[in-house]
Amino acid sequence: MIERHMATLYQDVIDALLQRIASGALPPGAMLPSEVQLGKELGVAQGTARKAVMELEARGLIQRTQGRGSFVTLRTPEESLFSFFQLRRPDGTMDPPGLLSETLKTRPAKAGERETLHDAPETVYELTRARTLGGDVSVVETSVLSTALFPGLADRGRLPNTLYVFLQQAYSTIILRTEETLRAVPAGKAVAKRLGVAPGDPLLAITRHTYDALDRVVEVRTSHCRTDKHAYFAFRSRST
Amino acid sequence: MIERHMATLYQDVIDALLQRIASGALPPGAMLPSEVQLGKELGVAQGTARKAVMELEARGLIQRTQGRGSFVTLRTPEESLFSFFQLRRPDGTMDPPGLLSETLKTRPAKAGERETLHDAPETVYELTRARTLGGDVSVVETSVLSTALFPGLADRGRLPNTLYVFLQQAYSTIILRTEETLRAVPAGKAVAKRLGVAPGDPLLAITRHTYDALDRVVEVRTSHCRTDKHAYFAFRSRST
DNA sequence: GAGTGGTCTAGACCACTTT
DNA sequence: AAGTGGTCTAGACCACTCC
Image (cartoon, rainbow over all chains, first blue to last red; front, top):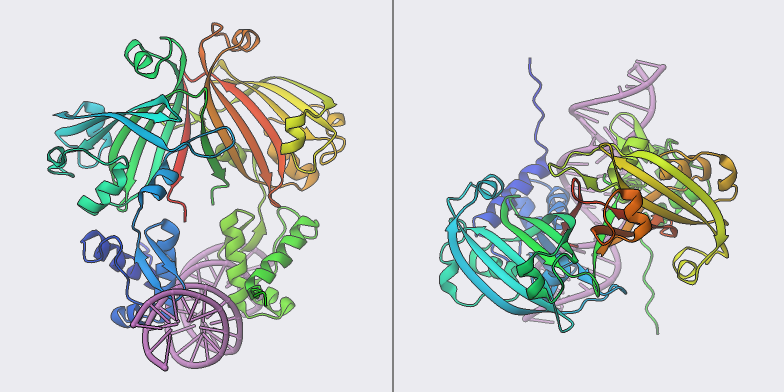
């Protein structure tokens, strides 16, 4: 006979909350029911509801403060930048990035993009941007997103500096984590010209996969960065 | 009047455990008292002891398994490699790194090293190693450690492939986290020769600060890596 | 003052590992 | 069978925020 693990009670509570958030019943910024209230609604003790809510806080999906309540994560532009933009000055401080240019087009998805992006979209948006750091053009990046997941994105005119805040506001898509692979590559002609370096000069190439609250890949981004005045910061803890 | 926060009870339990671990009373691999036992010893309820132990598990200092007990983290060579060695094949799998050469010398600490390393040591060990990945020489790295923290390190003969396992066994120093800064740089003559690339070719330069259980910087390491066949992997979650 | 999360207790039962 | 961590309950008090 096959053993089947009982789902734990607080797991059920987590799923119930995820459901409410993903469905839009609890949009970003909304306040959750209190721990006791949530317990009553789902027929569990306050401590059990608490454990579920704390787990979601650890995942970054909700934020809680004593005396105020628990709220679905609302990403601000500052947070968003600080969380996911990793180029810093040598001393660790951030040079606020500026947006220099931006072009958006719709095109068929390449094979690799269909494999990676959630739901294997037929067509994608391709968003290319150049960023400045401390006055110098330092980053050229290209984002690829599914047209199916974000309908009408192209019609919205100029996009804000922080894409993830926009995705949250316009589509209730909460960006929770990224996976990046880094390489040192020689600058190509076009990129070199845009960054003001010589062709062949070393650049940091970053490929990013971006995950939402349901752990779906909603963006693939490739960046090329100068690292003469800035560096990429990474932190690593023992995996548990 | 100045308000002073009461330390929480489970914080006291955490401190007591940290004390026992740092003092060597609970060496790596040792079993902790059970939750109830720990509660009795420190005069708190089982749930309070549990919260402390779970916090330490989250920090990576101890590991717990149902039915067996809680144990001070014992790093194995495999874990150590997988936790802190971030160069992987494009598909994410690891090429087990080989150790090609190793030289260890003692020298006065440079100014920057004194500022960074714990306790501003006067003299340091400088450990230089070349590593292979899948047959090719791919990494050249230099580790700098305080001679005061690790007395007799130079007399121990050949060091194992995984330095952190050795530090744990020989000095009860548990490595928990690292901070790394990455740059793309042109290969210098000496490094280029050792890695089999042309001078000026792009390399990934990694500077690592290594922290122990008490959050002290116990190592500064600089690596230069080829990234034509491998890439550096980084993961990032929303900071809570 | 009412409502919230933060901490703590005491006890219970279960699932798992070891002997 | 004994001992462990994993889950859950029910109730309590505190600290904080907001009205």
